[in-house]
Length: 289
Image (cartoon, rainbow, N blue to C red):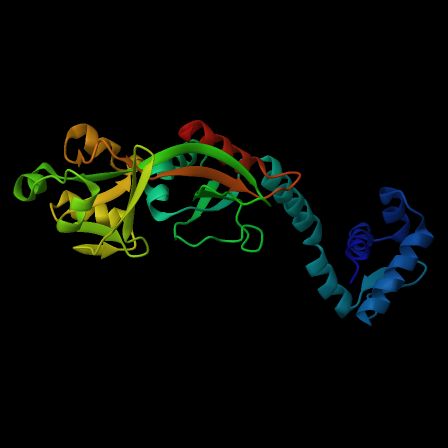
Protein backbone atom coordinates (compact mmCIF):
# COMPACT_ATOMS: atom_id res chain seq x y z
CA UNK A 1 0.00 0.00 0.00
CA UNK A 2 1.09 3.52 -0.81
CA UNK A 3 2.05 5.45 2.34
CA UNK A 4 0.96 8.81 0.95
CA UNK A 5 -2.50 7.45 0.07
CA UNK A 6 -2.92 6.04 3.57
CA UNK A 7 -2.02 9.43 5.08
CA UNK A 8 -4.51 11.15 2.74
CA UNK A 9 -7.17 8.60 3.72
CA UNK A 10 -6.57 9.35 7.41
CA UNK A 11 -7.00 13.07 6.83
CA UNK A 12 -10.26 12.55 4.96
CA UNK A 13 -11.60 10.47 7.86
CA UNK A 14 -10.43 12.98 10.48
CA UNK A 15 -12.04 15.90 8.66
CA UNK A 16 -15.18 13.91 7.87
CA UNK A 17 -15.28 15.37 4.40
CA UNK A 18 -13.31 15.31 1.14
CA UNK A 19 -13.85 19.03 0.75
CA UNK A 20 -12.44 19.95 4.18
CA UNK A 21 -9.50 17.57 3.80
CA UNK A 22 -8.70 18.93 0.32
CA UNK A 23 -8.75 22.53 1.61
CA UNK A 24 -6.52 21.64 4.55
CA UNK A 25 -4.00 19.70 2.42
CA UNK A 26 -3.99 22.16 -0.47
CA UNK A 27 -5.03 19.62 -3.10
CA UNK A 28 -8.15 19.20 -5.21
CA UNK A 29 -11.16 17.19 -4.10
CA UNK A 30 -10.86 15.17 -7.32
CA UNK A 31 -7.23 14.28 -6.53
CA UNK A 32 -8.23 13.04 -3.07
CA UNK A 33 -11.08 10.99 -4.47
CA UNK A 34 -8.76 9.38 -7.03
CA UNK A 35 -6.16 8.49 -4.39
CA UNK A 36 -8.73 6.90 -2.09
CA UNK A 37 -10.09 4.82 -4.99
CA UNK A 38 -6.56 3.65 -5.76
CA UNK A 39 -6.08 2.75 -2.10
CA UNK A 40 -9.28 0.72 -2.19
CA UNK A 41 -7.98 -1.05 -5.29
CA UNK A 42 -4.68 -1.80 -3.52
CA UNK A 43 -6.45 -3.26 -0.49
CA UNK A 44 -9.23 -4.86 -2.54
CA UNK A 45 -11.61 -3.48 0.09
CA UNK A 46 -14.22 -0.73 0.16
CA UNK A 47 -13.05 1.69 2.81
CA UNK A 48 -15.66 4.46 2.76
CA UNK A 49 -19.40 4.61 2.17
CA UNK A 50 -20.69 8.09 1.30
CA UNK A 51 -23.64 9.89 -0.19
CA UNK A 52 -24.33 13.55 -0.80
CA UNK A 53 -24.57 14.34 2.92
CA UNK A 54 -22.73 11.70 5.00
CA UNK A 55 -19.62 9.54 4.98
CA UNK A 56 -18.85 6.53 7.12
CA UNK A 57 -16.13 3.91 7.42
CA UNK A 58 -16.62 0.30 6.49
CA UNK A 59 -15.27 -2.34 8.87
CA UNK A 60 -12.17 -2.61 6.63
CA UNK A 61 -11.89 1.19 6.65
CA UNK A 62 -12.00 1.23 10.45
CA UNK A 63 -9.12 -1.27 10.63
CA UNK A 64 -7.04 0.67 8.10
CA UNK A 65 -7.74 4.01 9.77
CA UNK A 66 -6.71 2.66 13.18
CA UNK A 67 -3.40 1.36 11.81
CA UNK A 68 -2.71 4.19 9.36
CA UNK A 69 -3.27 6.80 12.07
CA UNK A 70 0.08 5.72 13.50
CA UNK A 71 1.90 6.65 10.30
CA UNK A 72 2.45 10.41 10.86
CA UNK A 73 4.07 9.75 14.26
CA UNK A 74 6.07 6.86 12.84
CA UNK A 75 7.35 8.96 9.93
CA UNK A 76 8.25 11.90 12.16
CA UNK A 77 10.11 9.67 14.63
CA UNK A 78 11.91 7.88 11.80
CA UNK A 79 12.99 11.17 10.25
CA UNK A 80 14.22 12.38 13.64
CA UNK A 81 16.17 9.16 14.25
CA UNK A 82 17.76 9.31 10.81
CA UNK A 83 18.67 12.96 11.31
CA UNK A 84 20.10 12.42 14.79
CA UNK A 85 21.76 9.19 13.74
CA UNK A 86 23.87 11.07 11.22
CA UNK A 87 24.27 14.50 12.81
CA UNK A 88 23.72 13.90 16.51
CA UNK A 89 26.03 12.26 19.02
CA UNK A 90 23.73 9.29 19.45
CA UNK A 91 23.79 5.68 18.32
CA UNK A 92 26.29 2.84 18.07
CA UNK A 93 29.89 2.98 16.88
CA UNK A 94 31.25 -0.39 15.79
CA UNK A 95 34.99 -1.05 15.67
CA UNK A 96 37.57 -3.81 15.79
CA UNK A 97 41.01 -3.99 17.40
CA UNK A 98 43.31 -6.63 18.91
CA UNK A 99 42.70 -7.67 22.51
CA UNK A 100 45.71 -5.96 24.08
CA UNK A 101 45.20 -2.72 22.18
CA UNK A 102 41.53 -2.64 23.11
CA UNK A 103 42.31 -3.01 26.82
CA UNK A 104 45.45 -0.88 27.16
CA UNK A 105 45.13 1.83 24.50
CA UNK A 106 41.50 2.16 23.43
CA UNK A 107 39.63 1.52 26.67
CA UNK A 108 40.65 4.81 28.38
CA UNK A 109 39.55 6.70 25.25
CA UNK A 110 36.24 4.85 24.97
CA UNK A 111 35.62 5.29 28.70
CA UNK A 112 36.04 9.04 28.33
CA UNK A 113 33.72 9.17 25.29
CA UNK A 114 30.95 7.22 27.02
CA UNK A 115 31.29 9.29 30.19
CA UNK A 116 30.86 12.54 28.24
CA UNK A 117 28.29 11.32 25.70
CA UNK A 118 25.74 9.03 27.31
CA UNK A 119 23.84 8.44 24.04
CA UNK A 120 26.85 6.95 22.23
CA UNK A 121 27.17 3.17 22.42
CA UNK A 122 30.45 1.47 21.52
CA UNK A 123 30.64 -2.05 20.11
CA UNK A 124 34.17 -3.52 20.06
CA UNK A 125 35.30 -6.75 18.43
CA UNK A 126 38.50 -7.39 20.37
CA UNK A 127 39.46 -10.56 18.57
CA UNK A 128 42.63 -10.83 16.51
CA UNK A 129 40.58 -11.35 13.33
CA UNK A 130 41.30 -8.99 10.43
CA UNK A 131 37.79 -8.08 9.38
CA UNK A 132 36.59 -6.68 6.07
CA UNK A 133 35.32 -3.37 7.41
CA UNK A 134 32.74 -2.85 4.66
CA UNK A 135 31.38 -6.39 4.41
CA UNK A 136 31.33 -6.83 8.21
CA UNK A 137 29.85 -3.36 8.83
CA UNK A 138 32.58 -1.85 11.02
CA UNK A 139 33.03 1.92 11.27
CA UNK A 140 36.78 1.62 11.77
CA UNK A 141 39.63 -0.60 12.94
CA UNK A 142 42.80 -0.03 14.94
CA UNK A 143 45.46 -2.36 13.56
CA UNK A 144 49.04 -3.29 14.26
CA UNK A 145 50.67 -3.49 10.85
CA UNK A 146 53.55 -2.15 8.80
CA UNK A 147 51.52 -2.61 5.58
CA UNK A 148 48.16 -0.84 5.93
CA UNK A 149 45.43 -1.71 3.38
CA UNK A 150 45.51 0.32 0.15
CA UNK A 151 41.73 0.39 -0.30
CA UNK A 152 41.10 2.14 3.04
CA UNK A 153 42.01 5.42 4.68
CA UNK A 154 44.89 4.51 6.99
CA UNK A 155 46.17 7.07 9.50
CA UNK A 156 49.38 6.19 11.34
CA UNK A 157 48.93 6.74 15.07
CA UNK A 158 52.32 5.75 16.46
CA UNK A 159 55.23 3.32 16.28
CA UNK A 160 55.90 1.08 19.24
CA UNK A 161 58.49 -1.52 20.10
CA UNK A 162 58.40 -4.90 21.81
CA UNK A 163 60.31 -5.22 25.07
CA UNK A 164 61.76 -8.39 26.59
CA UNK A 165 61.05 -8.26 30.30
CA UNK A 166 60.81 -10.22 33.52
CA UNK A 167 60.36 -9.57 37.21
CA UNK A 168 63.33 -8.86 39.52
CA UNK A 169 62.35 -12.02 41.45
CA UNK A 170 62.62 -14.22 38.36
CA UNK A 171 65.94 -12.67 37.34
CA UNK A 172 67.36 -13.11 40.85
CA UNK A 173 66.54 -16.82 40.68
CA UNK A 174 67.46 -17.57 37.06
CA UNK A 175 69.87 -14.85 36.00
CA UNK A 176 69.58 -12.27 33.23
CA UNK A 177 70.33 -13.18 29.57
CA UNK A 178 73.24 -11.20 28.13
CA UNK A 179 72.54 -12.06 24.48
CA UNK A 180 69.45 -13.07 22.46
CA UNK A 181 70.89 -16.61 22.05
CA UNK A 182 70.80 -17.10 25.83
CA UNK A 183 67.01 -16.75 25.75
CA UNK A 184 66.89 -20.33 24.49
CA UNK A 185 68.24 -21.50 27.85
CA UNK A 186 65.64 -19.49 29.80
CA UNK A 187 61.98 -20.02 30.55
CA UNK A 188 60.17 -17.86 28.01
CA UNK A 189 56.53 -16.89 27.65
CA UNK A 190 55.46 -16.85 24.00
CA UNK A 191 52.49 -16.26 21.74
CA UNK A 192 51.04 -19.37 20.13
CA UNK A 193 51.20 -17.81 16.66
CA UNK A 194 54.59 -16.09 17.12
CA UNK A 195 57.13 -18.41 18.70
CA UNK A 196 60.24 -16.57 17.56
CA UNK A 197 61.69 -13.21 18.52
CA UNK A 198 63.77 -11.01 16.23
CA UNK A 199 66.57 -8.68 17.31
CA UNK A 200 68.86 -6.28 15.45
CA UNK A 201 72.33 -5.11 16.41
CA UNK A 202 74.89 -3.23 14.28
CA UNK A 203 72.78 -3.80 11.19
CA UNK A 204 72.56 -7.54 11.71
CA UNK A 205 69.18 -9.19 12.31
CA UNK A 206 68.87 -12.39 14.30
CA UNK A 207 65.87 -14.67 14.77
CA UNK A 208 65.58 -16.67 17.98
CA UNK A 209 63.19 -19.65 17.90
CA UNK A 210 61.70 -20.49 21.27
CA UNK A 211 59.68 -23.20 22.95
CA UNK A 212 57.59 -21.61 25.65
CA UNK A 213 57.42 -22.36 29.33
CA UNK A 214 53.95 -20.84 28.89
CA UNK A 215 52.23 -20.36 25.53
CA UNK A 216 49.05 -18.36 24.93
CA UNK A 217 47.23 -16.50 22.17
CA UNK A 218 46.80 -13.39 24.31
CA UNK A 219 49.54 -10.96 25.39
CA UNK A 220 47.59 -10.12 28.53
CA UNK A 221 47.98 -13.72 29.70
CA UNK A 222 51.71 -13.58 28.97
CA UNK A 223 51.92 -10.39 31.02
CA UNK A 224 50.16 -12.08 33.94
CA UNK A 225 52.57 -15.02 33.71
CA UNK A 226 55.56 -12.66 33.67
CA UNK A 227 54.28 -10.69 36.68
CA UNK A 228 53.89 -13.98 38.54
CA UNK A 229 57.61 -14.76 37.97
CA UNK A 230 57.12 -17.60 35.46
CA UNK A 231 59.55 -16.40 32.85
CA UNK A 232 60.65 -13.82 30.27
CA UNK A 233 58.01 -12.27 28.04
CA UNK A 234 58.28 -10.06 25.01
CA UNK A 235 55.43 -7.56 25.16
CA UNK A 236 54.37 -4.31 23.46
CA UNK A 237 55.84 -1.36 25.32
CA UNK A 238 52.43 0.33 25.64
CA UNK A 239 51.19 -2.69 27.62
CA UNK A 240 53.90 -2.63 30.29
CA UNK A 241 54.82 1.05 30.50
CA UNK A 242 53.58 1.42 34.09
CA UNK A 243 55.24 -1.82 35.26
CA UNK A 244 58.58 -0.77 33.74
CA UNK A 245 58.33 2.60 35.48
CA UNK A 246 57.43 1.06 38.85
CA UNK A 247 60.13 -1.63 38.59
CA UNK A 248 57.68 -4.55 38.70
CA UNK A 249 59.18 -5.58 35.37
CA UNK A 250 62.74 -5.07 34.13
CA UNK A 251 63.59 -4.46 30.47
CA UNK A 252 66.22 -6.91 29.18
CA UNK A 253 68.86 -6.86 26.42
CA UNK A 254 69.20 -3.06 26.30
CA UNK A 255 71.85 -3.20 23.55
CA UNK A 256 69.56 -5.09 21.18
CA UNK A 257 67.02 -3.45 18.92
CA UNK A 258 63.78 -5.41 19.17
CA UNK A 259 61.00 -5.48 16.60
CA UNK A 260 58.87 -2.41 15.95
CA UNK A 261 55.33 -2.20 14.67
CA UNK A 262 53.18 0.64 13.42
CA UNK A 263 49.73 1.34 14.78
CA UNK A 264 47.12 2.50 12.26
CA UNK A 265 43.60 3.82 12.44
CA UNK A 266 41.83 2.34 9.41
CA UNK A 267 38.39 3.25 8.06
CA UNK A 268 36.44 2.97 4.78
CA UNK A 269 36.64 5.60 2.07
CA UNK A 270 33.09 6.94 2.19
CA UNK A 271 32.01 10.55 1.44
CA UNK A 272 30.26 11.16 4.77
CA UNK A 273 30.18 9.48 8.14
CA UNK A 274 28.01 10.04 11.25
CA UNK A 275 29.11 12.62 13.81
CA UNK A 276 29.43 9.95 16.51
CA UNK A 277 32.00 8.11 14.36
CA UNK A 278 33.91 11.32 13.60
CA UNK A 279 34.05 12.03 17.33
CA UNK A 280 35.55 8.61 18.07
CA UNK A 281 38.10 8.88 15.26
CA UNK A 282 39.23 12.30 16.49
CA UNK A 283 39.39 11.11 20.11
CA UNK A 284 41.62 8.17 19.15
CA UNK A 285 43.97 10.40 17.15
CA UNK A 286 44.16 12.91 20.02
CA UNK A 287 44.55 10.18 22.63
CA UNK A 288 47.22 8.10 20.90
CA UNK A 289 49.32 10.36 18.69
